[in-house]
Length: 614
Image (cartoon, rainbow, N blue to C red; front, top):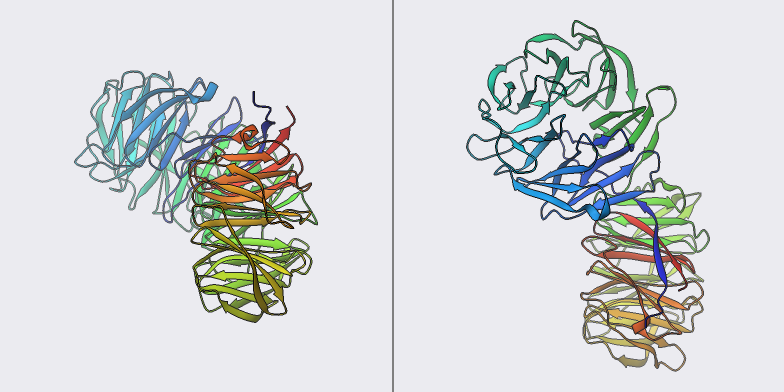
Protein backbone atom coordinates (compact mmCIF):
# COMPACT_ATOMS: atom_id res chain seq x y z
CA UNK A 1 0.00 0.00 0.00
CA UNK A 2 1.59 3.25 -1.17
CA UNK A 3 1.14 6.18 1.19
CA UNK A 4 2.36 8.81 -1.24
CA UNK A 5 1.41 12.47 -1.22
CA UNK A 6 -1.25 13.88 -3.50
CA UNK A 7 -0.16 16.36 -6.16
CA UNK A 8 -2.29 19.00 -7.82
CA UNK A 9 -1.44 21.25 -10.75
CA UNK A 10 -1.92 24.71 -9.28
CA UNK A 11 -0.72 27.04 -12.05
CA UNK A 12 0.67 26.83 -15.58
CA UNK A 13 2.66 29.65 -17.12
CA UNK A 14 2.12 29.13 -20.84
CA UNK A 15 4.70 29.18 -23.59
CA UNK A 16 4.21 31.70 -26.41
CA UNK A 17 2.97 30.93 -29.94
CA UNK A 18 5.59 29.68 -32.41
CA UNK A 19 6.21 32.45 -34.93
CA UNK A 20 8.11 32.69 -38.22
CA UNK A 21 9.61 35.80 -39.81
CA UNK A 22 7.61 37.00 -42.81
CA UNK A 23 4.54 34.87 -42.03
CA UNK A 24 1.33 35.46 -40.16
CA UNK A 25 0.26 33.02 -37.44
CA UNK A 26 -3.19 31.79 -36.49
CA UNK A 27 -4.77 32.17 -33.10
CA UNK A 28 -8.40 31.21 -32.86
CA UNK A 29 -10.87 31.09 -30.02
CA UNK A 30 -14.13 30.02 -28.51
CA UNK A 31 -16.37 33.00 -27.65
CA UNK A 32 -18.46 30.88 -25.25
CA UNK A 33 -15.66 29.95 -22.85
CA UNK A 34 -13.33 32.89 -23.65
CA UNK A 35 -10.47 30.53 -24.38
CA UNK A 36 -8.00 30.89 -27.25
CA UNK A 37 -5.95 28.28 -29.08
CA UNK A 38 -2.39 28.72 -30.30
CA UNK A 39 0.42 26.36 -31.26
CA UNK A 40 3.97 25.90 -30.03
CA UNK A 41 6.03 23.01 -31.35
CA UNK A 42 3.98 19.80 -31.12
CA UNK A 43 1.58 21.31 -28.56
CA UNK A 44 -1.79 23.03 -28.91
CA UNK A 45 -2.25 25.46 -26.01
CA UNK A 46 -5.79 26.10 -24.67
CA UNK A 47 -5.52 29.39 -22.80
CA UNK A 48 -8.29 31.21 -20.89
CA UNK A 49 -8.27 34.97 -21.47
CA UNK A 50 -10.10 35.63 -18.22
CA UNK A 51 -8.00 33.12 -16.21
CA UNK A 52 -4.49 33.16 -17.74
CA UNK A 53 -3.01 30.71 -15.21
CA UNK A 54 -5.45 28.01 -16.35
CA UNK A 55 -3.76 26.39 -19.31
CA UNK A 56 -4.41 23.03 -20.92
CA UNK A 57 -2.04 21.45 -23.43
CA UNK A 58 -2.84 18.93 -26.16
CA UNK A 59 0.35 17.14 -27.15
CA UNK A 60 -0.66 14.17 -29.30
CA UNK A 61 0.67 15.38 -32.68
CA UNK A 62 3.78 13.65 -33.97
CA UNK A 63 4.89 16.77 -35.86
CA UNK A 64 4.82 20.52 -35.20
CA UNK A 65 1.27 21.89 -35.13
CA UNK A 66 0.41 24.94 -37.23
CA UNK A 67 -3.28 25.64 -36.58
CA UNK A 68 -6.15 24.62 -34.28
CA UNK A 69 -9.81 25.67 -34.25
CA UNK A 70 -12.92 25.05 -32.14
CA UNK A 71 -16.01 23.58 -33.82
CA UNK A 72 -19.09 25.86 -33.84
CA UNK A 73 -20.62 23.97 -30.87
CA UNK A 74 -17.30 24.20 -28.91
CA UNK A 75 -17.28 20.42 -28.32
CA UNK A 76 -14.46 19.54 -30.72
CA UNK A 77 -11.14 20.95 -31.86
CA UNK A 78 -9.53 20.32 -35.25
CA UNK A 79 -5.75 20.79 -35.43
CA UNK A 80 -3.38 20.47 -38.38
CA UNK A 81 0.39 19.95 -38.54
CA UNK A 82 3.33 20.31 -40.92
CA UNK A 83 2.94 16.73 -42.21
CA UNK A 84 -0.57 17.40 -43.59
CA UNK A 85 -2.46 15.54 -40.85
CA UNK A 86 -5.64 16.91 -39.25
CA UNK A 87 -6.68 15.50 -35.87
CA UNK A 88 -10.19 16.06 -34.46
CA UNK A 89 -10.42 15.73 -30.67
CA UNK A 90 -12.84 16.48 -27.85
CA UNK A 91 -12.47 19.54 -25.66
CA UNK A 92 -13.48 17.65 -22.51
CA UNK A 93 -12.36 14.53 -20.58
CA UNK A 94 -8.78 14.02 -21.61
CA UNK A 95 -9.08 15.19 -25.22
CA UNK A 96 -10.41 11.94 -26.68
CA UNK A 97 -9.46 11.50 -30.36
CA UNK A 98 -12.43 11.37 -32.75
CA UNK A 99 -10.62 11.09 -36.10
CA UNK A 100 -7.31 11.60 -37.83
CA UNK A 101 -7.02 12.31 -41.56
CA UNK A 102 -4.13 12.91 -43.94
CA UNK A 103 -5.56 15.92 -45.74
CA UNK A 104 -2.63 17.34 -47.74
CA UNK A 105 0.82 16.08 -48.73
CA UNK A 106 2.54 19.14 -47.19
CA UNK A 107 2.03 21.46 -44.22
CA UNK A 108 -1.42 22.74 -43.26
CA UNK A 109 -1.54 26.54 -42.95
CA UNK A 110 -5.20 27.15 -42.14
CA UNK A 111 -8.43 25.27 -41.53
CA UNK A 112 -12.02 26.24 -40.83
CA UNK A 113 -15.21 24.49 -39.78
CA UNK A 114 -18.47 24.96 -41.67
CA UNK A 115 -21.12 26.77 -39.57
CA UNK A 116 -23.09 23.52 -39.11
CA UNK A 117 -19.94 21.74 -37.87
CA UNK A 118 -20.24 18.99 -40.49
CA UNK A 119 -17.44 19.95 -42.87
CA UNK A 120 -13.87 21.21 -42.56
CA UNK A 121 -11.84 23.04 -45.18
CA UNK A 122 -8.03 22.96 -44.90
CA UNK A 123 -5.32 24.58 -47.00
CA UNK A 124 -1.55 24.72 -47.16
CA UNK A 125 1.29 23.24 -49.18
CA UNK A 126 0.86 20.18 -51.36
CA UNK A 127 2.62 18.33 -54.13
CA UNK A 128 0.82 18.71 -57.42
CA UNK A 129 -2.36 20.74 -57.40
CA UNK A 130 -4.12 19.86 -54.15
CA UNK A 131 -3.49 22.93 -52.00
CA UNK A 132 -7.07 23.07 -50.63
CA UNK A 133 -9.35 20.28 -49.49
CA UNK A 134 -12.79 20.15 -47.87
CA UNK A 135 -14.04 16.98 -46.20
CA UNK A 136 -16.77 15.63 -43.93
CA UNK A 137 -15.65 15.79 -40.31
CA UNK A 138 -16.87 12.29 -39.40
CA UNK A 139 -15.90 10.30 -42.51
CA UNK A 140 -13.12 12.30 -44.18
CA UNK A 141 -14.80 12.02 -47.61
CA UNK A 142 -14.22 14.88 -50.05
CA UNK A 143 -16.88 17.54 -50.59
CA UNK A 144 -15.73 19.20 -53.79
CA UNK A 145 -12.85 19.97 -56.13
CA UNK A 146 -10.59 22.93 -55.44
CA UNK A 147 -8.70 23.93 -58.57
CA UNK A 148 -7.22 27.31 -59.40
CA UNK A 149 -4.15 27.63 -57.15
CA UNK A 150 -0.61 27.07 -58.38
CA UNK A 151 1.33 27.73 -55.15
CA UNK A 152 1.02 27.31 -51.38
CA UNK A 153 -2.36 28.45 -50.01
CA UNK A 154 -1.94 30.47 -46.82
CA UNK A 155 -5.53 30.98 -45.68
CA UNK A 156 -9.06 29.73 -46.26
CA UNK A 157 -12.45 30.61 -44.85
CA UNK A 158 -15.99 29.21 -44.76
CA UNK A 159 -18.95 31.53 -45.22
CA UNK A 160 -20.88 31.37 -41.90
CA UNK A 161 -24.38 31.53 -43.48
CA UNK A 162 -26.18 29.76 -46.29
CA UNK A 163 -25.66 29.59 -49.28
CA UNK A 164 -22.27 28.16 -48.33
CA UNK A 165 -19.13 29.52 -49.97
CA UNK A 166 -15.42 28.92 -49.48
CA UNK A 167 -12.66 31.42 -50.27
CA UNK A 168 -8.92 30.78 -50.28
CA UNK A 169 -5.79 32.86 -50.88
CA UNK A 170 -2.08 32.26 -51.15
CA UNK A 171 1.39 32.80 -52.54
CA UNK A 172 0.16 32.98 -56.16
CA UNK A 173 -1.36 36.46 -55.31
CA UNK A 174 -4.86 35.05 -55.99
CA UNK A 175 -8.09 34.98 -54.01
CA UNK A 176 -10.19 32.04 -55.24
CA UNK A 177 -13.93 31.71 -54.71
CA UNK A 178 -15.82 28.39 -54.59
CA UNK A 179 -19.57 27.60 -54.51
CA UNK A 180 -21.17 24.46 -53.13
CA UNK A 181 -21.50 21.98 -51.58
CA UNK A 182 -20.18 20.00 -53.37
CA UNK A 183 -17.75 22.85 -53.85
CA UNK A 184 -16.47 23.83 -57.27
CA UNK A 185 -14.30 26.64 -58.57
CA UNK A 186 -16.24 29.81 -59.43
CA UNK A 187 -13.63 32.52 -60.06
CA UNK A 188 -10.17 33.92 -59.31
CA UNK A 189 -9.90 37.46 -57.99
CA UNK A 190 -6.65 39.17 -58.99
CA UNK A 191 -6.61 42.40 -57.01
CA UNK A 192 -3.41 41.82 -55.01
CA UNK A 193 0.18 42.21 -56.21
CA UNK A 194 1.93 40.14 -53.51
CA UNK A 195 1.33 37.16 -51.19
CA UNK A 196 -2.24 37.18 -49.87
CA UNK A 197 -1.71 36.29 -46.19
CA UNK A 198 -5.15 36.05 -44.60
CA UNK A 199 -8.80 36.00 -45.57
CA UNK A 200 -11.93 36.05 -43.38
CA UNK A 201 -15.71 36.10 -43.87
CA UNK A 202 -17.64 38.53 -41.66
CA UNK A 203 -19.73 36.88 -38.89
CA UNK A 204 -22.99 38.09 -40.52
CA UNK A 205 -22.01 36.39 -43.81
CA UNK A 206 -22.33 39.51 -46.02
CA UNK A 207 -18.69 40.31 -46.81
CA UNK A 208 -15.21 38.89 -46.75
CA UNK A 209 -11.82 40.59 -46.59
CA UNK A 210 -8.36 39.61 -47.82
CA UNK A 211 -5.09 41.21 -46.63
CA UNK A 212 -1.74 40.99 -48.35
CA UNK A 213 1.96 41.75 -48.28
CA UNK A 214 1.19 44.52 -50.80
CA UNK A 215 -0.11 46.49 -47.74
CA UNK A 216 -3.71 46.40 -49.05
CA UNK A 217 -6.94 45.01 -47.65
CA UNK A 218 -9.78 44.29 -50.11
CA UNK A 219 -13.46 43.64 -49.33
CA UNK A 220 -15.74 41.42 -51.40
CA UNK A 221 -19.40 40.44 -51.53
CA UNK A 222 -19.65 37.09 -49.70
CA UNK A 223 -22.38 35.70 -51.95
CA UNK A 224 -21.00 36.54 -55.40
CA UNK A 225 -17.30 37.11 -54.75
CA UNK A 226 -17.36 40.50 -56.49
CA UNK A 227 -15.02 43.23 -55.19
CA UNK A 228 -16.87 45.86 -53.13
CA UNK A 229 -14.14 48.18 -51.88
CA UNK A 230 -10.88 48.36 -49.98
CA UNK A 231 -9.22 49.61 -46.83
CA UNK A 232 -8.26 53.26 -47.27
CA UNK A 233 -4.56 53.93 -47.98
CA UNK A 234 -4.89 57.11 -45.91
CA UNK A 235 -3.19 56.39 -42.57
CA UNK A 236 -2.87 52.77 -43.73
CA UNK A 237 -0.21 50.17 -42.98
CA UNK A 238 3.38 50.76 -44.11
CA UNK A 239 4.34 47.08 -44.14
CA UNK A 240 2.97 43.65 -45.05
CA UNK A 241 -0.43 42.96 -43.44
CA UNK A 242 -0.20 39.48 -41.90
CA UNK A 243 -3.59 38.87 -40.31
CA UNK A 244 -7.14 40.20 -40.07
CA UNK A 245 -10.09 39.49 -37.76
CA UNK A 246 -13.70 40.79 -37.70
CA UNK A 247 -15.53 42.32 -34.76
CA UNK A 248 -18.49 40.22 -33.55
CA UNK A 249 -20.95 42.77 -35.02
CA UNK A 250 -19.29 42.68 -38.50
CA UNK A 251 -18.87 46.48 -38.51
CA UNK A 252 -15.11 46.64 -37.85
CA UNK A 253 -11.94 44.70 -38.60
CA UNK A 254 -8.60 44.53 -36.81
CA UNK A 255 -5.40 44.17 -38.88
CA UNK A 256 -1.79 43.60 -37.81
CA UNK A 257 1.30 44.34 -39.83
CA UNK A 258 5.10 44.18 -40.11
CA UNK A 259 5.09 47.97 -39.51
CA UNK A 260 4.59 47.07 -35.78
CA UNK A 261 1.11 48.64 -35.61
CA UNK A 262 -2.38 47.17 -35.28
CA UNK A 263 -5.29 49.13 -36.77
CA UNK A 264 -9.03 49.04 -36.20
CA UNK A 265 -11.04 49.93 -39.30
CA UNK A 266 -14.69 50.95 -39.61
CA UNK A 267 -16.27 49.05 -42.51
CA UNK A 268 -19.07 50.88 -44.34
CA UNK A 269 -22.10 49.16 -45.90
CA UNK A 270 -20.62 49.63 -49.38
CA UNK A 271 -17.46 47.72 -48.36
CA UNK A 272 -14.86 50.43 -47.79
CA UNK A 273 -12.77 50.79 -44.66
CA UNK A 274 -11.22 53.75 -42.88
CA UNK A 275 -8.96 53.78 -39.83
CA UNK A 276 -10.76 54.26 -36.53
CA UNK A 277 -7.79 53.69 -34.19
CA UNK A 278 -4.11 52.74 -34.45
CA UNK A 279 -2.71 50.61 -31.64
CA UNK A 280 1.02 50.37 -30.96
CA UNK A 281 1.94 47.42 -28.79
CA UNK A 282 4.57 47.85 -26.06
CA UNK A 283 8.09 46.94 -27.12
CA UNK A 284 11.53 48.24 -27.98
CA UNK A 285 10.79 48.71 -31.68
CA UNK A 286 13.01 45.84 -32.85
CA UNK A 287 12.22 43.12 -35.37
CA UNK A 288 10.60 41.01 -32.63
CA UNK A 289 7.89 43.69 -32.27
CA UNK A 290 6.48 43.10 -35.77
CA UNK A 291 2.85 42.02 -35.32
CA UNK A 292 1.95 38.67 -36.87
CA UNK A 293 -1.35 37.48 -35.39
CA UNK A 294 -4.66 38.85 -34.09
CA UNK A 295 -8.06 37.76 -32.77
CA UNK A 296 -11.17 39.78 -31.88
CA UNK A 297 -13.14 37.76 -29.36
CA UNK A 298 -16.03 39.27 -27.42
CA UNK A 299 -14.50 42.36 -25.78
CA UNK A 300 -10.89 41.14 -26.11
CA UNK A 301 -8.48 42.18 -28.84
CA UNK A 302 -5.59 39.71 -28.83
CA UNK A 303 -2.44 40.74 -30.73
CA UNK A 304 0.72 38.62 -31.08
CA UNK A 305 4.20 39.90 -31.99
CA UNK A 306 7.01 38.05 -33.76
CA UNK A 307 8.83 37.72 -30.43
CA UNK A 308 5.77 35.95 -28.99
CA UNK A 309 4.47 38.74 -26.75
CA UNK A 310 0.66 38.62 -26.46
CA UNK A 311 -1.03 42.00 -25.89
CA UNK A 312 -4.69 42.03 -24.86
CA UNK A 313 -6.75 45.20 -25.33
CA UNK A 314 -10.31 45.84 -24.26
CA UNK A 315 -12.45 46.69 -27.31
CA UNK A 316 -14.73 48.89 -25.16
CA UNK A 317 -11.82 50.90 -23.70
CA UNK A 318 -9.02 51.12 -26.26
CA UNK A 319 -7.18 53.90 -24.42
CA UNK A 320 -6.51 51.57 -21.52
CA UNK A 321 -3.02 50.04 -21.54
CA UNK A 322 -3.05 46.44 -22.78
CA UNK A 323 -2.27 43.45 -20.57
CA UNK A 324 0.95 41.86 -21.81
CA UNK A 325 1.91 38.21 -21.53
CA UNK A 326 5.03 36.51 -22.73
CA UNK A 327 7.13 33.46 -21.98
CA UNK A 328 9.42 30.98 -23.65
CA UNK A 329 9.37 29.94 -27.29
CA UNK A 330 11.80 27.06 -26.78
CA UNK A 331 12.87 24.57 -24.08
CA UNK A 332 12.90 26.24 -20.64
CA UNK A 333 16.20 24.57 -19.70
CA UNK A 334 16.94 26.11 -16.27
CA UNK A 335 14.81 27.26 -13.37
CA UNK A 336 15.84 29.07 -10.19
CA UNK A 337 13.86 30.24 -7.18
CA UNK A 338 15.50 33.00 -5.18
CA UNK A 339 15.87 32.31 -1.47
CA UNK A 340 15.35 36.01 -0.67
CA UNK A 341 12.01 36.01 -2.54
CA UNK A 342 10.63 32.45 -2.93
CA UNK A 343 7.63 33.70 -4.91
CA UNK A 344 9.94 34.97 -7.70
CA UNK A 345 10.82 32.31 -10.28
CA UNK A 346 13.42 32.79 -13.03
CA UNK A 347 13.54 30.51 -16.07
CA UNK A 348 15.92 30.59 -19.02
CA UNK A 349 16.06 29.20 -22.55
CA UNK A 350 18.80 28.82 -25.18
CA UNK A 351 17.71 31.97 -27.06
CA UNK A 352 19.23 34.34 -24.45
CA UNK A 353 15.93 34.78 -22.66
CA UNK A 354 15.44 34.97 -18.89
CA UNK A 355 11.77 35.30 -17.86
CA UNK A 356 10.52 36.41 -14.43
CA UNK A 357 7.37 34.80 -13.00
CA UNK A 358 5.62 35.53 -9.72
CA UNK A 359 3.74 32.66 -8.11
CA UNK A 360 0.05 33.56 -8.09
CA UNK A 361 0.22 36.16 -10.88
CA UNK A 362 2.35 34.57 -13.61
CA UNK A 363 4.36 36.54 -16.17
CA UNK A 364 6.22 39.49 -14.68
CA UNK A 365 8.60 40.63 -17.43
CA UNK A 366 11.92 39.62 -18.95
CA UNK A 367 15.38 40.17 -17.50
CA UNK A 368 17.16 42.41 -19.97
CA UNK A 369 20.73 41.24 -20.58
CA UNK A 370 23.28 43.52 -22.24
CA UNK A 371 25.45 40.55 -23.16
CA UNK A 372 23.96 38.59 -26.06
CA UNK A 373 24.79 34.93 -25.48
CA UNK A 374 22.96 31.64 -25.49
CA UNK A 375 21.96 30.17 -22.12
CA UNK A 376 22.53 26.49 -21.42
CA UNK A 377 22.41 26.70 -17.62
CA UNK A 378 21.37 29.42 -15.16
CA UNK A 379 22.10 29.43 -11.40
CA UNK A 380 21.43 31.98 -8.64
CA UNK A 381 22.52 32.53 -5.04
CA UNK A 382 22.24 35.51 -2.73
CA UNK A 383 21.23 37.98 -5.44
CA UNK A 384 23.99 36.79 -7.80
CA UNK A 385 23.26 35.17 -11.17
CA UNK A 386 25.58 33.07 -13.32
CA UNK A 387 25.02 31.34 -16.66
CA UNK A 388 26.90 29.84 -19.57
CA UNK A 389 26.14 28.96 -23.17
CA UNK A 390 28.14 27.33 -25.95
CA UNK A 391 31.27 29.47 -25.76
CA UNK A 392 34.04 29.45 -23.14
CA UNK A 393 32.52 32.23 -21.04
CA UNK A 394 30.64 32.44 -17.76
CA UNK A 395 28.17 35.36 -17.55
CA UNK A 396 27.80 36.93 -14.10
CA UNK A 397 25.42 39.62 -12.85
CA UNK A 398 23.73 40.81 -9.70
CA UNK A 399 19.97 41.05 -9.40
CA UNK A 400 18.77 44.38 -8.01
CA UNK A 401 15.16 45.57 -8.09
CA UNK A 402 14.26 42.79 -10.50
CA UNK A 403 16.88 43.83 -13.08
CA UNK A 404 20.42 42.75 -13.99
CA UNK A 405 23.28 44.98 -12.80
CA UNK A 406 27.08 44.75 -12.96
CA UNK A 407 27.11 42.33 -15.89
CA UNK A 408 30.44 40.69 -16.68
CA UNK A 409 31.78 37.77 -18.68
CA UNK A 410 34.70 35.60 -17.60
CA UNK A 411 36.63 33.44 -20.05
CA UNK A 412 37.40 30.08 -18.39
CA UNK A 413 39.38 28.74 -21.37
CA UNK A 414 37.11 25.79 -22.11
CA UNK A 415 33.45 24.90 -22.65
CA UNK A 416 31.74 24.94 -19.19
CA UNK A 417 29.78 21.81 -18.21
CA UNK A 418 28.28 22.97 -14.89
CA UNK A 419 28.52 25.91 -12.49
CA UNK A 420 27.77 26.22 -8.77
CA UNK A 421 27.73 29.31 -6.52
CA UNK A 422 28.58 29.23 -2.79
CA UNK A 423 25.33 30.25 -1.09
CA UNK A 424 26.91 32.22 1.78
CA UNK A 425 29.49 34.00 -0.38
CA UNK A 426 28.08 33.91 -3.95
CA UNK A 427 31.13 35.74 -5.32
CA UNK A 428 32.82 32.32 -5.08
CA UNK A 429 31.91 29.95 -7.92
CA UNK A 430 33.14 26.61 -9.16
CA UNK A 431 32.93 25.78 -12.87
CA UNK A 432 33.50 22.32 -14.33
CA UNK A 433 35.12 21.98 -17.73
CA UNK A 434 35.89 18.77 -19.68
CA UNK A 435 39.22 18.12 -17.94
CA UNK A 436 38.84 19.68 -14.50
CA UNK A 437 37.52 22.63 -12.51
CA UNK A 438 37.92 26.41 -12.47
CA UNK A 439 37.50 28.43 -9.26
CA UNK A 440 36.19 31.98 -9.69
CA UNK A 441 35.88 34.85 -7.25
CA UNK A 442 33.74 37.50 -8.92
CA UNK A 443 35.26 37.89 -12.37
CA UNK A 444 38.74 36.69 -11.36
CA UNK A 445 39.93 33.18 -12.17
CA UNK A 446 41.54 31.93 -8.94
CA UNK A 447 42.77 28.61 -10.31
CA UNK A 448 42.27 26.02 -13.02
CA UNK A 449 42.85 22.45 -11.80
CA UNK A 450 43.32 19.50 -14.14
CA UNK A 451 41.74 16.51 -12.38
CA UNK A 452 42.80 13.80 -14.82
CA UNK A 453 39.27 12.49 -15.54
CA UNK A 454 36.23 13.67 -17.55
CA UNK A 455 34.17 15.97 -15.36
CA UNK A 456 30.39 16.38 -15.78
CA UNK A 457 28.76 18.04 -12.73
CA UNK A 458 29.70 19.95 -9.58
CA UNK A 459 28.41 21.51 -6.35
CA UNK A 460 30.17 23.79 -3.87
CA UNK A 461 29.10 23.92 -0.20
CA UNK A 462 27.43 27.15 1.04
CA UNK A 463 30.52 28.17 3.02
CA UNK A 464 32.80 27.45 0.06
CA UNK A 465 35.06 24.95 1.90
CA UNK A 466 33.98 21.75 0.12
CA UNK A 467 33.29 20.78 -3.46
CA UNK A 468 31.77 17.61 -4.90
CA UNK A 469 32.71 16.76 -8.46
CA UNK A 470 30.76 14.25 -10.57
CA UNK A 471 32.45 12.37 -13.38
CA UNK A 472 31.70 10.59 -16.62
CA UNK A 473 32.63 7.28 -14.92
CA UNK A 474 29.80 7.69 -12.35
CA UNK A 475 32.08 8.39 -9.37
CA UNK A 476 31.64 11.29 -6.96
CA UNK A 477 34.83 12.85 -5.62
CA UNK A 478 34.75 15.07 -2.54
CA UNK A 479 37.38 17.83 -2.33
CA UNK A 480 38.25 20.34 0.39
CA UNK A 481 38.68 23.88 -0.92
CA UNK A 482 41.32 26.04 0.79
CA UNK A 483 42.19 29.32 -0.87
CA UNK A 484 42.44 28.40 -4.52
CA UNK A 485 43.47 24.76 -4.19
CA UNK A 486 41.43 21.56 -4.15
CA UNK A 487 42.44 18.51 -2.14
CA UNK A 488 40.74 15.13 -2.67
CA UNK A 489 39.07 13.76 0.48
CA UNK A 490 36.99 10.79 -0.67
CA UNK A 491 35.65 8.87 -3.66
CA UNK A 492 32.01 7.71 -3.53
CA UNK A 493 30.88 4.88 -5.80
CA UNK A 494 27.28 3.89 -6.43
CA UNK A 495 26.21 5.42 -9.74
CA UNK A 496 26.37 3.37 -12.93
CA UNK A 497 26.16 6.29 -15.38
CA UNK A 498 27.64 9.79 -15.87
CA UNK A 499 26.65 12.18 -13.06
CA UNK A 500 24.21 14.83 -14.30
CA UNK A 501 23.39 16.87 -11.17
CA UNK A 502 24.58 17.31 -7.54
CA UNK A 503 22.82 19.42 -4.89
CA UNK A 504 23.50 20.12 -1.19
CA UNK A 505 20.49 20.00 1.14
CA UNK A 506 19.42 23.40 2.60
CA UNK A 507 20.55 22.30 6.11
CA UNK A 508 23.88 21.20 4.54
CA UNK A 509 23.84 17.85 6.41
CA UNK A 510 23.29 15.86 3.18
CA UNK A 511 23.74 16.04 -0.57
CA UNK A 512 21.94 14.31 -3.43
CA UNK A 513 23.26 13.20 -6.79
CA UNK A 514 21.67 11.83 -9.96
CA UNK A 515 22.98 10.22 -13.13
CA UNK A 516 22.20 9.62 -16.80
CA UNK A 517 21.33 6.00 -15.96
CA UNK A 518 18.06 7.04 -14.16
CA UNK A 519 19.32 6.71 -10.57
CA UNK A 520 19.38 9.24 -7.71
CA UNK A 521 21.15 8.82 -4.35
CA UNK A 522 21.02 10.82 -1.09
CA UNK A 523 24.27 10.86 0.90
CA UNK A 524 25.04 11.81 4.51
CA UNK A 525 27.65 14.56 4.37
CA UNK A 526 29.44 13.71 7.62
CA UNK A 527 29.73 9.91 7.25
CA UNK A 528 29.58 9.92 3.41
CA UNK A 529 27.28 6.89 3.62
CA UNK A 530 24.16 6.45 1.51
CA UNK A 531 21.10 7.74 3.30
CA UNK A 532 18.53 6.88 0.61
CA UNK A 533 19.30 4.60 -2.32
CA UNK A 534 17.43 2.57 -4.98
CA UNK A 535 15.76 5.77 -6.24
CA UNK A 536 15.47 4.10 -9.62
CA UNK A 537 12.00 4.95 -10.84
CA UNK A 538 12.68 7.10 -13.91
CA UNK A 539 12.95 5.48 -17.34
CA UNK A 540 15.48 7.95 -18.83
CA UNK A 541 18.29 10.29 -17.77
CA UNK A 542 17.68 12.56 -14.77
CA UNK A 543 18.17 16.21 -15.77
CA UNK A 544 17.46 18.10 -12.56
CA UNK A 545 17.10 17.66 -8.82
CA UNK A 546 15.77 19.85 -5.99
CA UNK A 547 15.53 19.80 -2.19
CA UNK A 548 12.58 21.05 -0.15
CA UNK A 549 13.52 23.99 2.16
CA UNK A 550 13.11 21.76 5.27
CA UNK A 551 15.49 19.13 3.77
CA UNK A 552 12.91 16.31 4.13
CA UNK A 553 12.08 15.80 0.43
CA UNK A 554 14.03 15.39 -2.80
CA UNK A 555 12.45 15.87 -6.23
CA UNK A 556 13.93 14.65 -9.52
CA UNK A 557 12.94 15.57 -13.09
CA UNK A 558 13.92 13.49 -16.12
CA UNK A 559 13.86 13.10 -19.85
CA UNK A 560 10.96 10.64 -19.43
CA UNK A 561 8.64 13.69 -18.79
CA UNK A 562 8.00 12.76 -15.12
CA UNK A 563 8.77 14.45 -11.81
CA UNK A 564 9.26 12.11 -8.83
CA UNK A 565 9.23 13.31 -5.21
CA UNK A 566 10.85 11.17 -2.49
CA UNK A 567 10.43 11.65 1.26
CA UNK A 568 13.57 10.85 3.24
CA UNK A 569 11.53 9.34 6.09
CA UNK A 570 9.97 6.74 3.75
CA UNK A 571 11.38 4.08 1.41
CA UNK A 572 11.78 5.14 -2.25
CA UNK A 573 8.91 2.84 -3.25
CA UNK A 574 6.53 5.24 -1.41
CA UNK A 575 7.38 7.93 -3.95
CA UNK A 576 5.01 10.49 -5.45
CA UNK A 577 5.08 10.67 -9.27
CA UNK A 578 3.81 13.51 -11.43
CA UNK A 579 3.42 11.78 -14.80
CA UNK A 580 3.87 13.72 -18.02
CA UNK A 581 4.81 16.94 -16.25
CA UNK A 582 6.38 18.32 -19.46
CA UNK A 583 6.19 16.97 -23.01
CA UNK A 584 9.72 16.19 -24.20
CA UNK A 585 11.31 16.11 -20.74
CA UNK A 586 11.73 18.04 -17.48
CA UNK A 587 14.77 20.33 -17.36
CA UNK A 588 14.23 22.72 -14.43
CA UNK A 589 12.97 21.95 -10.92
CA UNK A 590 12.79 23.74 -7.57
CA UNK A 591 10.71 23.95 -4.38
CA UNK A 592 9.19 27.36 -3.59
CA UNK A 593 8.16 26.13 -0.13
CA UNK A 594 7.83 22.75 1.61
CA UNK A 595 4.59 21.95 -0.23
CA UNK A 596 5.07 23.54 -3.67
CA UNK A 597 7.22 22.35 -6.56
CA UNK A 598 7.82 24.36 -9.72
CA UNK A 599 9.05 22.70 -12.92
CA UNK A 600 9.99 23.72 -16.48
CA UNK A 601 10.71 21.67 -19.57
CA UNK A 602 11.03 21.01 -23.28
CA UNK A 603 7.43 22.19 -23.90
CA UNK A 604 8.52 25.76 -22.89
CA UNK A 605 5.89 25.86 -20.12
CA UNK A 606 6.41 26.39 -16.38
CA UNK A 607 4.14 24.61 -13.89
CA UNK A 608 3.53 24.94 -10.15
CA UNK A 609 2.41 21.80 -8.28
CA UNK A 610 1.14 21.61 -4.70
CA UNK A 611 1.82 18.58 -2.49
CA UNK A 612 -0.67 17.50 0.16
CA UNK A 613 -0.13 14.70 2.71
CA UNK A 614 -2.07 11.44 2.09
